[in-house]
Length: 304
Ligand SMILES: Nc1ncnc2c1ncn2[C@@H]1O[C@H](COP(=O)(O)OP(=O)(O)OP(=O)(O)O)[C@@H](O)[C@H]1O
Ligand SMILES: [Mg+2]
Image (cartoon, rainbow, N blue to C red):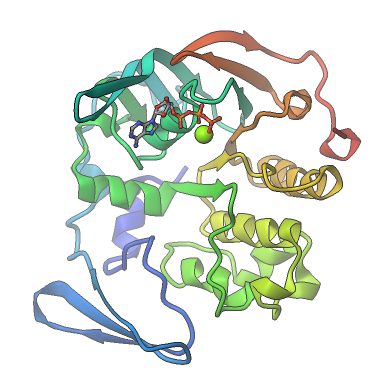
């Protein structure tokens, strides 16, 4: 496992992971660590994005703790709660979640709408922070990390796949993946990533020229191209029919098996749970049940 510190040494200056830089875009470095990006080809737009300075976001800066052993779980969460406040209204999305996720696991997260699945995934992925409780990633206490450290954590270690693919319409499949490979520390090439999801023959297609399932596989290629330790998927087949969804799940299954990527898949589809090493059921902000299927079913044998 590459440590955040080792990775930082190899990638002294990097852009934020959520920064989209593609062909036809001009990047200019300014003093004080700012970059101006001008986008050509479409209505020109300007965006200012921050660049980090050398070492500023070293994983070593994240508060280490003695709690998890090096060979312990990839993620450890204890007593997670999340309360959203909107004016007078309070919503308790998580009410005390304890969870360990192990290296190479394929975990399916099931539960009714509003049970806190996305909230939990977002906290694990450093997109959100809990109201109370603790999360460790590989010995680093994420709950004590600064926003910059969380950005660094997401960029180096986590791939996200969402229900709607969030591809950039003006970029081809290859360019959509290159956005990430241009920024990552030790990426595979866009071509390798797209081959892994069986899209070798669609590299130069624009999103509008791809089916929904193909677009989702581009999104998976983009998520895995940086070889993340963890792949977090929020309803990746939610917008797809059964046959197309199965192809997407096959891609996830392959990434998990071949790259050993710890994978969490949120779904409303109980059938998908049959391909998991472990199934967690969330209810009203708590894990209410956990199953370990005695025999895993291959994605291609699923149908719903
Ligand atoms: N940003 C937010 N602000 C306020 N309330 C929120 C926010 N995000 C989620 N919630 C609330 O927290 C609860 C849990 O939401 P969450 O999105 O985690 O559920 P979910 O299990 O993913 O549901 P679904 O299956 O519908 O996606 C819900 O009641 C939701 O309305
Ligand atoms: Mg959700």
